[in-house]
Image (cartoon, rainbow, N blue to C red; front, side):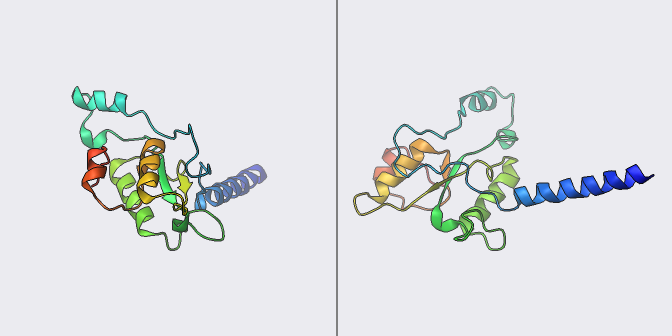
Length: 154
């Protein structure tokens, strides 16, 4: 009987430790913005093939997949550098809802990017982000040039 009590305490301790570790997810990728030769993209070709062949329904295509989005540093908690669980920004809330509906994960596989400096443009940042991550969790103006370059907007 005494061992059962010890096991219960151990289980409670482990459960609390797990919740603390997963409470405020910190970025997985902290590479400098505009770093060369970095690719944090998922190969969606096999998933696309399964959908096209009818093996997997489109609504289930991303189930159990880890998506690697980019978040701007200003979207994170200034003190911790992690996702603010009390008041996350709208981009984070939208990603959470997309993940819930699509049954995918993203909170343990995102990267952080900074706004462009005086020698960079927002267009350059957008194109670098598209080439480096699976998606961007913020908005950009929709222009014909960006559409022609293959940048898709919801």
